[in-house]
Image (cartoon, rainbow, N blue to C red; front, side, top):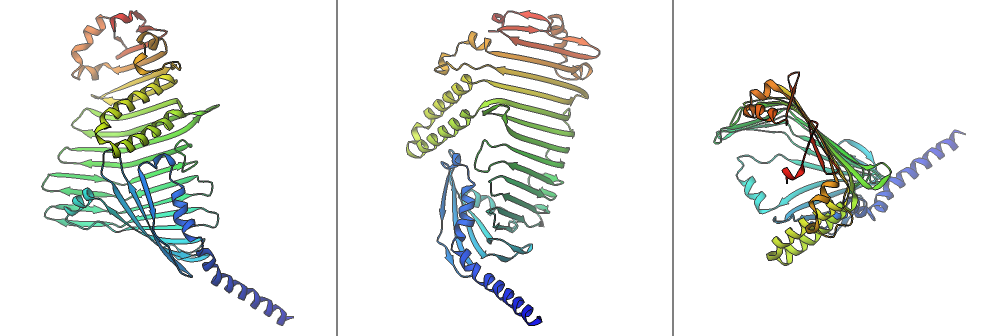
Length: 440
């Protein structure tokens, strides 16, 4: 009985060894598609006009392969930037990675380099070498990709200044359904340039973002950036504490062809020679027609092509581009909300602005826009609350009495109040109806 068990155990072990020995060669057949090809599939098609991707030849062995990729980015009116990536790929299923043994299709270490004249001129003036950048890529059996990035710490001190940088760690995870998450953490950075008498200190930085579909610019997504502290003593002395900003894109409820975008920014404490002490700013753009984005990128592609073929026509095309985009905005409805809360001149102030544009779908050109019809399609509500004592300490102090006398401002409980609305072509300011012909 023991003999049979031993034979079965040896057979299983032999099969496992054969699988581990043969699998890397089998996996190697499709290794370029599983790594480089999967990366390319994540790029949104709207960016194709500005990106050119060239894949190098694959040199494949039994357990490893080498390949390369060149990404050429050409922005509007800028010189091209070439990013060259050299791949050293280990075949699965069992691989030794920077984080220890891993199971998967492939693991690649990537060596990046940038080819751009302006970039090379800038770094040539640095009195130190740039810190080493490490990239690695893990392709899972479930067609997921995990991209890791690390920038080494840097410590430099010389007659021209100093740099103390704790480095960067980042990870990008693309799942099989093309949803993705990105995380970046930067350590503290302190830099001083003696010749310019300037310095900057950043306590650290964290960036988080996610998207429901990586190659769709209109997929639901969100991002958050936070910096605990930023400070400088020269050339301008200031310090900022608890800076954060968030961004999100979601589809409008019940309307798949409309999206909402929000962005919030908050600074808990500001210390400087300027009178601003804190800031909270919330912005929303709702009911944006998805066609606006697709038309924008379509026009961008056309503009890119014309810049390459007929540079002398660029100015005229930019004007036309602006008119076409303005027409799309004018034709479609839009909701714009803004809320600002700040401490300025040692007083708390608030602004709440809501703008609703009904749209003019029958408008054929932006030149045909009629001001009176546009006013009927526009609804605006604005509430402002200002600290009276703070305004009296500001350069606007001399405007208070004249505006109060004309009824444009109301003062109540130490607050300057402004309530304005525009609806159906009627403007109301602090309960007073104003003829629009006074303004236009």
